[in-house]
Length: 234
Image 1 (cartoon, helix red, strand yellow):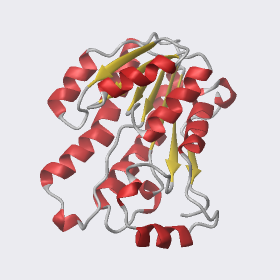
Image 2 (cartoon, helix red, strand yellow):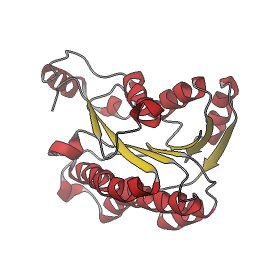
Image 3 (cartoon, helix red, strand yellow):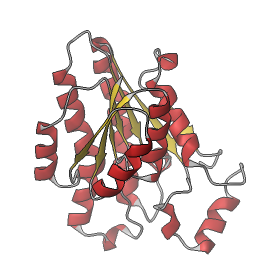
């Protein structure tokens, strides 16, 4: 299977890349600013890879990116960013960029890939959303909104794509040990940890395992599903 992965150079992205490479998939890896680093990383992979770049938070760059997309059988949307702070303190430009990155890019890439495929050809899409898209949280209003919109896309587009031999599913990670979450203070981390029945934060490998499952033939009857990976936090 040929699979496009956005945000492939991030923590969850790279963990997913390694798992899919182990299974022998051909990979098209997107990164925004870490092409050189990704070029070095892929040398250790036992499969054919192609690296594509683009700022998916910019509408013009997104349009240009979509024009160059190859045909694939799988699409994993991991690219994302967050903003921690009150809604009144977030700029309009920041909010628009987050919506473009998390939601508009997902929609536009899915449109292009669906149009490229033959009607009977398979297409499996997995979206990495967040438990915050299911519950919401103060201090990350726009991020939670974006992640909720992604889940709306999954539940709706699965009903369309299913009739065209395709599937759309999502994973909703909780607090995962990634550089994105490393920005929080030790006090914030301890407070969050106290709320997680599992007694620890999640690992990127655990998220990758769920993504790989949703891309596999073992989950062929799953469509419009949301797998929560949060240690019973939310």
